[in-house]
Length: 172
Image (cartoon, rainbow, N blue to C red; front, side, top):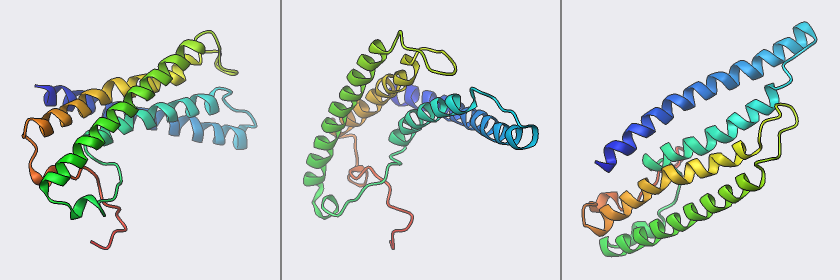
């Protein structure tokens, strides 16, 4: 059930990421064209593109977390047996949940602090920038908790105990 919910919201995030990318491309290239061809430009283009990039980064991190798409190394863990891998996986998931809490708390606090501050160009509350961290933390928590539950309940196979992607430049 939880996996279906996570898969569903990650699918919607993927669509949203594509839309954000299109908007950013239109804003940036449109602004470059207008500056060189028409000697004018959109004043909000740079600021809005920067904000969209922040949101795209945090939302993309949720999808990458679900797909185990973050880069990592298994130099130590790869040499351990199944029990050692399970212990390391449990520790890493607990540490990631702690980091997720820190991101949530810090982003939430910054959003509250900056609620009445507005951006220079768009004059929109700066809390929207920090809300990306809150949204990331809320969406990442069920993924991490689900992985921790699968590990502790024995539903995770031995070949799933290293949750990372090798670099594309890796000789393997």
